[in-house]
Length: 290
Image 1: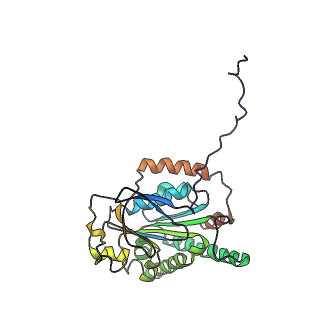
Image 2: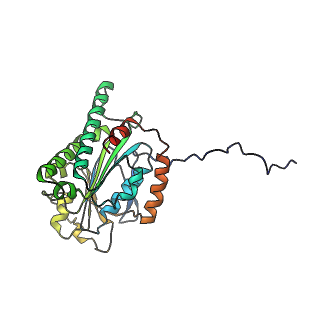
């Protein structure tokens, strides 16, 4: 029998990153319900608003959404983070990363409008009513941590209003062209998010709130009277809250948690895989404003 220990492997050569085979068009794992059963969130063609007091876990949930998206090869990422640290670890995975810069945030939303308009022209040309997973265009995830920074804190009133108007258009029209918005804020009251914008988010997550009024603002008016208030969530139970979807009733869930080390590990792997991808038109359009 010949000795093959010194044989040259036919598979030698540069390493090739292996993707996760996840698709943004599939439901993503959100966490578990009160009975310990897994909860999956069908986020494609929908939007989600997350609210709650500081430390309630809304940014952690947003990181779970963004982290899953980074492992999907059919979605481009547009990340807004006024603090630069809650979503900052995903920056190398993003096509555009916007920090505490309201001017760039507005410019990026205007670019997303152009992308949406072009996609609608495509749909009209091929006689479709919405983007399909098999189409040449991938999904786009716009994730915003602490919407209030851009809509009520930075800049002047005119710029803040412009940001809110643009965001409302993207939430309202983006669904059919696979543009999803995932936003987090402490209390989405009318001075932070206009009701006309807040009310068109299909999914809402209310983490621990300091009072019943704040819970109703997030979930929708009247749920407190029916026994659903995130004010009843234990303050030490971070990541726990009520999730409500279209035409549904609130569900108590415990969101999945990624530690800082988890995020770094996933982000580094996802960035490595994404660097090998050929930039599509959506990526080029988004990076043009960076």
